Image (cartoon, rainbow, N blue to C red):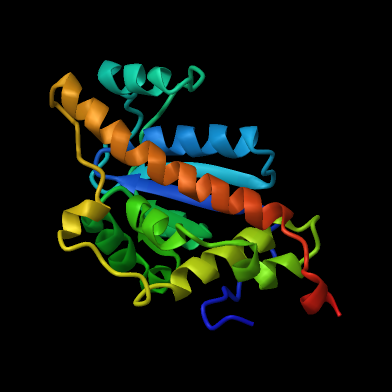
Length: 218
């Protein structure tokens, strides 16, 4: 078993938590995009939630954020912001902070989350280039156990920390905060968030369906 494997693996649902500051722009956009993309890719047994480190409860996404979501073809979805608590993190299998400050807050609240918390763009950077051969452990998990296959994929990505070069500018792993900014900043935020989310979706679609190679199945 991988050094990074989670010991809690009895839950049949794989839970992704996206985190930003107010939980009204970046993290709900990531939540909706990941949920829609995973569903479209046929990846089942996944729950996607979001929260904010300084959120006020029960706020909707501002109009600019809703327009951005619609521009990527996301269906209309009513959002209700919520404040981030330790229990949200403890109940997740994967946490995506929208910026490094959010990952730090997550790990501060629940230190064990350091193993399965990333910024979204960091995760994409580490996951880029992962192929079926890298997911041998996931391939040996029954196809019916999608959640455990995805947990195994997260372990593979976590193990690449320190092996994949880090960006010269740490902000390159962040998604820019568009709150109370102009439309161009919302567009920039989407242009940073969506390609990273696409990498995560592709990885999980592969992990959910990969089959053992002839060599490993003997």
